[in-house]
Image 1 (cartoon, rainbow, N blue to C red):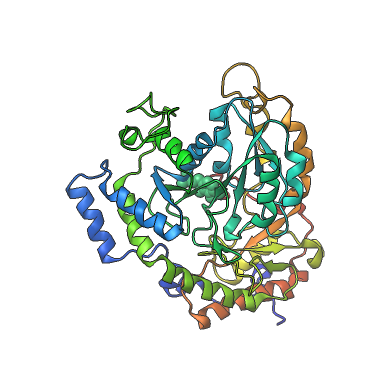
Image 2 (cartoon, rainbow, N blue to C red; image 1 turned 120 degrees about the horizontal axis):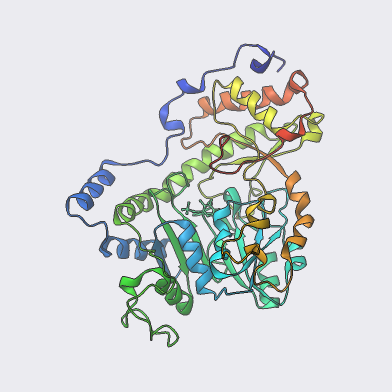
Amino acid sequence: MKKLLALCGGEKLFDHTQMPDELFHWPIITEEDEQNCLEIIRKNKFSGTDVTLRLQDEFAAWQGTKHALAFTNGTMALSAAMFAVGLGMGDEVICPTKTYWGTVSQAINFGASAVFCNINENLSMDPADIERCISHRTKAIMVVHYFGYPADMDAIMPIARKHGIKVIEDVSHAQGALYKGRKVGTFGDIAAMSMMSWKSFAAGELGMLVTDDQRLYERALAYGHYERNNSKNITDPELAPYPHIALGGVKGRANQLCSTLALGQLKHFDERMAEVDMAMQYFCDGIEGMKGLHPIRPPKGSGSTMGAWYLPQGSYKPSELEGLSSGRFAEAVRQETGGLHCWEGGNFCLHTHEFFKSFDFYNIGKPSRIAFADRDVRELDAACAPSEKMYCVSLPPFKKYLPECIDRYIEAYRAVAENYEQILEKDSALNGGRWYGADNA
Ligand SMILES: *Cc1c(COP(=O)(O)O)cnc(C)c1O
C-alpha cells in the first residue's frame, strides 16, 4: 500500500493508545493472586519458606526436572548455577555476545573470564563458533534462549560433552518454550532464569534454577539459602562441614510475596502462553515475506516453539531496504501506530562494553576479566564483530488473540517496509541495540 508515512507528515494509520488494554496487558493478575499477596503481607510471611517450597515442587513438575530452587532474582539464580558447576578462579565461561549482561557478568564473582561467541540470524548462539572459544580452562557454556528462540541444543550439547564442559541454560526469555518437542531448561546440566516483572513468566522479582542433578542442586542450595543449608537437605560430603551459612556469602532466598505470585502465574501459564502464541503467529504470518524485516520464530512443524514470546523480534536486513537503519525503521513504526513501543537492536553485544575491557573489580590494578586467566581473552573479542551486524526490530508483544486489532499493526509494519524510500537516510549508527537502563531503553 502506497501512503505518505506519518514520519514524513502523513496521517498515522491508527492510534495504538486507543487499542483494548488486554491486547498487551501483562502479567495477568487475578483476584485470587491479590488475595494470596494480602495473606503474605498480613501474616508477615515474606521471609518464610512454606510458599516457596510449594512453588518449587509445582515448578519442577511443570518444568519436568527433579529439582527447582527459587532465588531473589535471575542474576542470583545464574550465579548459583555457576557455583554449582564449580566455576572458579582462572576458569573460562563461554557466552553469546548478544544477551543481557545478567547472563555472564557474575563470572567476575568467581575470578572467571567471559569468552564471547557469535550469534546467528535468529540472535541465537552460533554452535559453529563455540569451538573457537574453547581452551583447557573452559568450564561452562552459557546458552541463552534469546528472546524466546530456542537455541540449537542438538548442535551445542555434543560439543560440550566432547570437551567435558558443563552447560548452563539461561531460560530468562523462554519459559515453556520447546526445542524439538522438549522444554528448554532440560538440555543442559543446569538451567536458571529470571521471573522479574517484565519477563514472560513474571512474578515480581524472582529467579528460578532447575536441574536433575542432585549434586548441582545441593551446591546451588548451599550457595545462598543458608536457612536450608543443613543436614536434612545437604548430603554432599564436600558441603556438609559448612552448614547454616551461605557458601557464596550471599542471600539468595526468594521473597514469598513473589513466590505466591509465581504460583498464580504457573496455574494459568500454559493456557495464556497458547493465546500469546496464537496472536504472535497470526502477526508473524501477516508480515511474512515483507522486505527488510523477517519474524524470528522456529519453522512450523519443527516441534520448537517460542514459549510466551518474550519481546518478539524480527531479523532486520538493512540491505533489503537500501541501507535504511533499524532505528529509523522502528521510529517510522512508532509514528505510524501512534506510539507502539517499537525499538531496534535488542541488547548491544557485550564484548563492546567497557566493563569487559578494563574494569578492576578485585582492585589489584588489572582488568578483572583477565586477572586470573591463562590468556588475554579480550583478544578473542574481535572475532565477534559479525554479531554487531545482526540487527533486529521489535514486534508488538501481543498477549491476546484479537485478529482485527492485530491486522492494524500488520498494516503499519507493511506500510513502513513498502514506503521506505521516503525515510531513507543512511545513518548506520542507528543500527544498534541498547544497554538496558540507558536513556534509550
Ligand atoms: C533478565 C535477565 C537476567 C537477569 O535476571 P534478573 O531477574 O533481572 O536478575 C539474566 N539473563 C537474561 C537473558 C535476562 O533477560
